[in-house]
Image 1 (cartoon, one colour):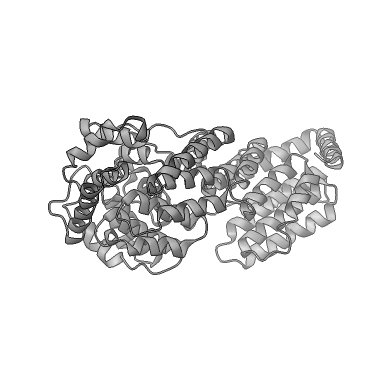
Image 2 (cartoon, one colour):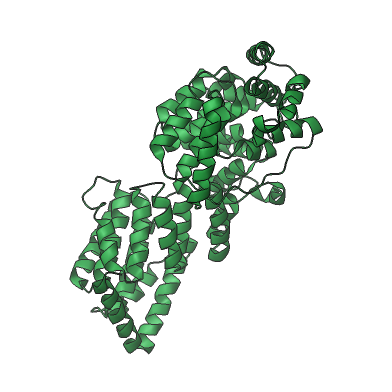
Length: 520
């Protein structure tokens, strides 16, 4: 079992246009006092396009540009959209109505990301509309998002390429397209799109996306210096600068400048969105106190990831899974919530939940080694060793980072134990333990492997199982993380059962072996 969150970045979230607008991320609560020259040119171009060609899409571009820049929206363009009836997509009509009334919609939950029939129907509707409206970049983004939810990566790439085929100043298009490109491992295209837009020098949301995306790719940001200036520009609201301060804080943290990192993370918490809040929760475990307790989290909409991580850090596994499930529902295409949730499920010994989560998410992230490893761990623990063995074949022999290889070797050891091949299982666990001793900061991997080996030795009635279990428990430090403490507690319970009812364990062992032989 495995979950590595050492390198979280505040990359943009991918949501529908309507929800993104309702969250306030397409226009700040306080506006710029003076438009930059680049913004003035962008606004003038959108208005010129609308005046020369009165269409739904030039009207949408005109009002969205004005909305994002914080100036009065073009009233004729708004009225044009409201008069367009069924020709105007419901998303744009709702946006125009919200601007007209001055009362933005509240975010609503997305569709069921596992309902393939509904997703397919929506794709068909959008494709039909795009036949008549090929310049509708918002719908191309929505099409790409839906394809991601179906695991159709090539179709998603074609759709997002169409959305970002030209230079755009639209914040929603830029941030959404960059996130999709990043997910599809087209990182160079993500940063190129962001950097080619004039707004990457003026808009704090786009600058934040460029910095975070560059960090995620291990590249130097070309907008960090501009970002530092914008971060201190009080003509932008705290909310408009929250992801920018968070991205800059992350960059400072990775460069080792913890004092500046803490200052920037504290700034990001002045009025955070859920993404910067999750980044702050993650960073607080890396660099210490940054003032999380002073944030009113009940005022942050769609806040799922941060409480999921916080509850896990407190050892509240059920609450962590509840929040984690909402996080996964919100960002279903992303493997991070699936990795988190499947790991917590194994810690909480909810192995069937782990199996369901990983199988679903592997359809969207095929071949991901950590998801496969977590799936095989849960399959092994429930006696489905034949399926686990077949699934692990894709990982054996492949070049992986050493931490992945440690987890995979230990999982193979578990499978061999559950198949009754105790000597092979013991050897694989020892190999994993030996590798963990060679890895910098590999102590937790070492302790976890020892605890799980001891559990399997008790299960197998191995020689010296009791002594090995006590030795593994003695090696758990007092400041161990909650997941290590939980596995240690499970080992203590196994030890008690072993001493009190050895026949019960033997019966369970025989049943698992029977299931494995039958191919469950």
